[in-house]
Structure formats: structure tokens, C-alpha cells
Amino acid sequence: MMRSLINATAKRSIHLAQLNCQRGMHTRNKKAMELIANGWSALKEVDRVIDYCELNDKRLIPLLRTAKENFELALETDNSNTHARFWLSKLHLKYHVPGACKAVGAALLVEAADMGDADAQYELACRLRVENDYVQADQQAFQYLEMAVDQLHPAALYMLGAVYLTGDCVRKDISSAIWCFHRASQKGHAGAAIAYGSLLLRGFQVPECLTKFTVRKDSSTRTSRKNAENSKKNALEMAREQFEIAAKAKCDLGFRWLKRLDEEEKRLTNL
Image (cartoon, rainbow, N blue to C red; front, side, top):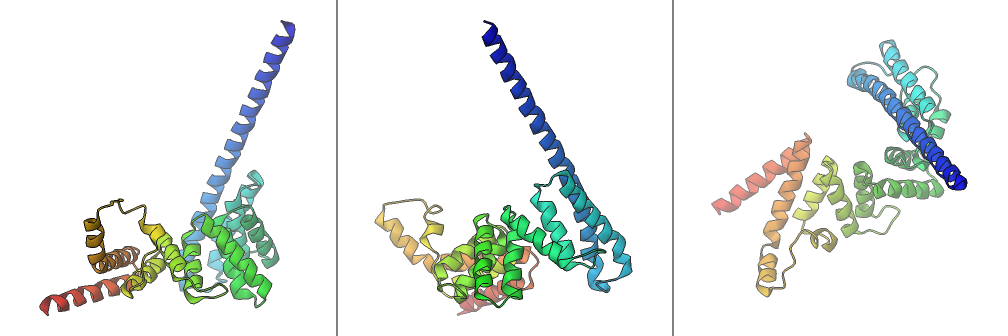
């Protein structure tokens, strides 16, 4: 009886300790996210005006310092927070913030990418491809790009689609490129929508993996024949949908493609 009571008390103590630990982690995460939001707001204000002044304009220093302090405090509050690492790395690598160090920024970026942050993985992949001419760096860039794609990062999906479309570092694969553009377009990426729509207009077929779950299965031969007859019309409609996504993202090319489609439809109607 006494042993059962001791065991029950021990279990309750362990449970309470776990709850307190979870509460502490939640509090730290919440505080860290608040600090990141503050830093991001300051950095957003910098991005808003940076095109109209010099990169090292002294008027930007207070905002950059505020962003840096908040990101550093967020990392102190929650050392496992990948967002704080990523944004702090961007400050060191991209902006003229007091105390900036590119080596520190690169280390933070690699850490955030290895910890699973999709933005960091994409950023690191871009930097490895652009800033290095070595084969090993190119392979590493592709690995980090695939990591970001696994998390359906829109820009990473678009870049991987471009890689497959051009055959850069990989075997050229239009179907894989279309798949990447399709998934990025679903997330509102204007460039991917333009690329996907233009490929549809050029007559490239949509991979079966993108259609087999959206088209209702029907064993009727008549239905299959009707779908085949309307394939060209569907391609035009799908392309228009993609250009509308780009236009919604305020992409000038999206508006141009929509205008071009309207003019072509009018021409065909007149004929």
C-alpha cells in the first residue's frame, strides 16, 4: 500500500515537472516570437526606404540597431529558435548594421539551415550557387535547395523548377519543372505562375501526378473521349488561371499575358 502511494506521488511529481517545463518553453517561445516581430517591423521599415537612400545612410542606423538587438534578445531567450538565427544572419550579411560581421552571419545562416529553417535553406542555396564556382559548393546548394523544397518553400520550388527546366546541374526534366512551378504557383509565387502558364501555352502536358487527384475517376469511355477533346481548351483556361495568379501578385508580366490572351481570343472569334 505504501509502495503504491509512493509510486503515485512520484508519477504526479514527474507529470508536474513536465508541465512546468512545457509552460516554460511556451513562455520562452512566445517571448522570442514577440522580439522577432519587433525586429522584423524595424527591418521592414528599413526595406521601405532603403531604395531612396544610401545603404550606409546614418538615418537607418537606429532602425538597424533596434532590429539587431531584438533578434539577439530573441536568440538569448530561445536558443533553438531558427527564425531569430535566420533574421540575425541576414542583418550581418546584407545590411550595414553596426557590428556587422559576414563570418558571424554565414555561421548563423548555416546553423539555421541545418536546424531546418526553410528560409535559411533557400537563402544558403542561393548564396552557394552565386558566390562560389566550385562543384562541391554547387552540390551543397542543390542539397539545401531540396531541403527547402521538401517544406514547399515557394521561392525554392521556383528555383528548382528553373533548374529542371534548363538542365542546370541535373538532367533536364520538364515534368518535374512543371510540378515545381505548379506547387509554387499554388502559394502565390508570380514567377512560377508565369513559367507554368507559358509552358501550358507551348503545349507541354501537365504531369499525371498533378491531375489524378483532382479529376474524378470515371471508367466511362465517353467521358475520357470528351476530356481528350477539351484538353487544348483546358490548357488555355489553366494558363489564364496562372496569369491571373501572377496579376493578383501585381506582376506586370501577368497583366501582359492576360491582355495577350484576350487579344488572341478576339482574333479567333472574328475569324
